[in-house]
Structures are given as C-alpha cells and as structure tokens.
Length: 468
Picture (tube, rainbow, N blue to C red):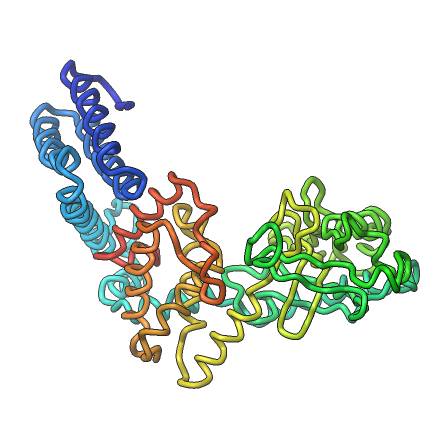
C-alpha cells in the first residue's frame, strides 16, 4: 500500500493488519462476496491514503480513527460487512458530492484585474444546483447521449457509399458468389447509437440452398452453447460436394465461419483499391489490420481535400450473415473462438424489436432510458466494460415487473436500473432475456466488477455523479 509523503512507523503496522483482516475476510466470504469485498477494500484504502497525505498531526489522527472505525466493518463477519459497507460508502460519497455541489454554487475567486462574472455563467452554476434528477436526465440525454441528425445522416451516407463500392466489386470479380443484397444494420440504423456516430455494420447475407444446408441450434451441438450454432452440409449422398458454392469452405462437414471470414478478408480487405476509393469518396478509407474481424476505418475529408482531424473516424464492420426466418447467424470468430465452425446467434434483432414493441404499446421511454445508460457507461471509465447487450436485457427484465415507463417516471426507472444492476453484479450473473442459459456478465473480470460495483453504490444516494 503506497502512501504519499512521509510515513509514520504505525502506518506499516496498519497496512499489515488490513492485509491480514482482508485476507481472512476473503476466506470467509468466498467467491460470492468478491464484489462486496473489493468495494470495502477500495473504501478503506482511500480513507487511509487520505490520512497518510494529511499535513498536520491532528488531521492524521482524526482520519486514522475514522479508518479504524470503518475497518471494523471489514474484519467483522460477512453479515456485518454486507450491512455496513453500503452505509460507509454512502456517508463519504454523499459528503463529497455535497461539497462538490457547494463548490458549483459558490462564486469563484477573482483577482483585482478581473471584472465581475457574467450573469449568464452565474445562472448556469445556479441551475446545476437546482435541477431535479428528472431534469438532469433530460439535459444529459440531449447534450451528451443523443446524436445530431446531421451527424447520423453523414455517417449513414458514408457507410452506404462503402456498401455500394464493396457490392459492386464482389459482383464484378466474383459473379458466381451467391450473395443477397447488402445493407446497413446495427445501432446507427436503429437510432440507438449514442455520444458519437462512429460505428456501423455492413450486413453481407450468404444465400444457401435449403436442400443442402441445415442450421443446427447451439443446444443441439457438441458445444451445447446457446449462441454457438453450426451449419451442417446435408444430402451429400445425393448432392455430392461441389454442388454448392459454399462447399469450398467446409470443415468437417460444417460450413466454417472462420473460413468465410478469411475469404472476405483476402477478397475485399486485401484486394480492393482503397486509395482509389478514398479519392472518389473524398475521404480516407483503409482496412483495420491485426484483428479477426473485418473492419474499415473511414476519416471524412474537408473542403480543401485534406482529412478532417477534428471529426472522429467511422468504423464499418463487415458481417457475413445467414438468415432463416427470425434467426440471424453472423460469422464473428472473435465471439466464437476457438470453434472454427461455430456461427454466432445474434440476439440484437430480437432485443431491439421487443423494446420497440413495448414502447409502441404504451408510449414508454425504454429506448431513451437505454440510450442514457449506454452513454453513462461509455463516458464513465469504471462502467465502460458494460456493453449494450446487458443494459438492453436489464431493461427487458425490468419491464416484466414495471409497466410505467412514461416520461414522468424516467428518474425512478433510472434509479431502479442502478439498483438492479448492483444486484446482478453481486450475483455475478445477468441472464439473457431470450436465452436464460447465457450469462451476459461472464466476460467481466473480478477487478471490473469491483470498480463498477463501487461506482454504482456511490450512485445509489447521489445518481447525479453518473451524469457529470
């Protein structure tokens, strides 16, 4: 444990005591209490660090007393720990947040050379102090989460231009490749993208002969993973290998998603003349190397023919796609590795459609709540590991028990989402709404859970800290 400035002789002993107590608390709590234990560790560590940085002896002794008082919670039983940690964290966070609010309301010191502050800036500071959570959420959505229509239109136009170029190239160079009409997909098209219009999906549908191919659900394969489907070649005794264009990408009797991605990587990413396309579209277009996915980076140009450095780049992901009624399988080796034959079952269309249906039926604000949560997680480093899928499923689960998603209850639902998310993190599991066997939090590390849990615990009493 590192301290700033000079160290007292007793501080080493305190660190040893804390390490001993926390190690024993971990043995008592086990894996299930890892998130709560991490939050306790952060709270105690920060309290003692503040004590170590104090300049005069009285402040040091006062901080150390507070630290030992709160340390007794950690060294207590797991029951006392769970009851006490939230109160400790909330006490200090509420005090810090109130102090921050007071600083916003206070007039900043000015030198004799400076004039009086403008009335506009004073009114803005006062406005921050008097806005309700409902008003803060609306303000946050319009100023931080929502995208300008011009930005969305510009990104969609660039993505469509790239789509046209790729489709024309494939039709001219590989006319025998059975592909459907390419189109855009994802959050940019569904009005669910937040903060910046910086990514889009280019859907490349593969056309399979229904009599030669069979889609096998993940539960029925040897993998037994609900999201890892396989595409089996059938009727080989009547229609031998070579009758279908896609037979050349068979591995062990199944259509290999990895082989299909490698083919598009060589055919599109490594073969197309991107400098010529860049000059035609007045922007810089180049493949993104080094990853298993098919991605392009696009940087818009300016009026002088150069590259606009102030505008964030747009990333377009090519997704080879298989459709069968309402089932959409994508070739994404980064999600299905190390299984070269596995295809990823995309739940995004189902989740998006369900949210739209619920909002249409009662005029609710579920999609708007989702966009606020996505922006909060994207702009907060501690919450950044939380992607869109867990947040969408959080709202879908909550909608089963809560029917009022009107604009007037936006603040209540936002706070409820925070509380529910804390519960899922403590359990270490948030099950998919459509595939309950899938845990959407399984990819999070213990440290990430600790950091997210601490931040969300702080936001229970002061949700405004997420909207800064």
